[in-house]
Length: 95
Image (cartoon, rainbow, N blue to C red; front, side, top):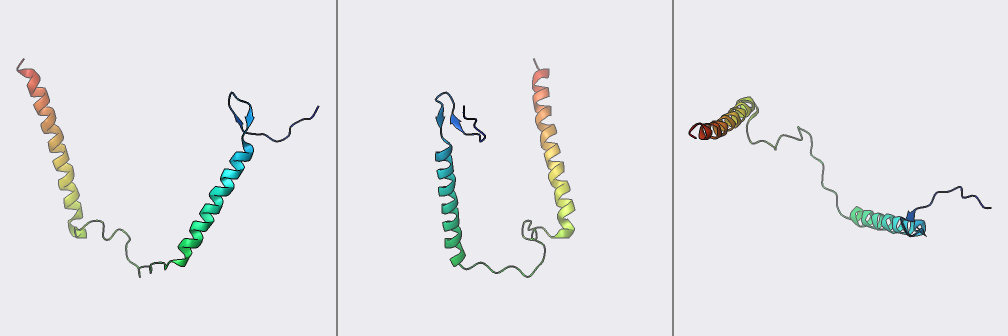
């Protein structure tokens, strides 16, 4: 009796060995990946920036006002939340 030392992937319920198909699909995927890398390597790569913070352009607000802007955002969010809850809780009081 021959003992199998390697595991194999099978299609559940059909007892079909699909390991060869999986290997072929992996090989094809790898070949496509290498072809894409080869195509992309021919294109010019953009020049890297000289330096500075990578997050500099994310916020159009100057750094000295960012704290106050975030404080304003949090205060408005809290006011909106309390206002909505006040409306909902007040609606039940009239009944």
